[in-house]
Length: 211
Ligand SMILES: N[C@@H](CCC(=O)N[C@@H](CS)C(=O)NCC(=O)O)C(=O)O
Image (cartoon, rainbow, N blue to C red; front, side, top):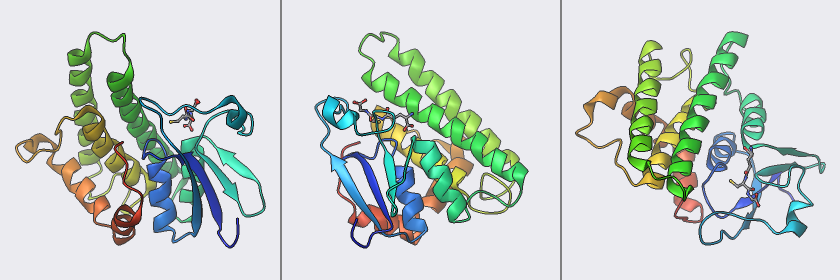
């Protein structure tokens, strides 16, 4: 791993790994990436590579001493704890987990609409995506602040901002268009997250990918 603090193994996509990269960037961690090429539709690993990974999939985070952590949200939570992004109390920690779960649900929903071939009811599913966004927006408003949990920026904000923007890309629907004033609080949150200098720098310097 040379002098890097972490090695992060994933595909050459944003996918479910990008929030981890954001957190590493905000933590000013030095990390090296292994990026497997993505095939036509969906990332697939060879059996040989799968057998080297704890759960046969990625992302996987390797620490300097060789130990590894898998499962995207577990990796992100580990790093968020390390860099002080999990809220101030046990309750706020749990609220962060709750919001991250909702964001992951949105992301999975959007990917399944895009990639499930036998799904012939895509319009209904797109409506349910809008309902999920409204629900995220309402929960954000209930916190009365710029951020999702308590008074501070947390990893929950990163997950929501990323999941919403990525859903726009995956589904090619401009949920955050200027006309859509219903989602103003959510749009502000996303703008705040994406204006964090470390995130801007990461986006500016990372390999461009379609998804
Ligand atoms: N629950 C796991 C899911 C991991 C997962 O399914 N990763 C996909 C990429 S998004 C993968 O490695 N696919 C390759 C394969 O299964 O061959 C997580 O959150 O990390």
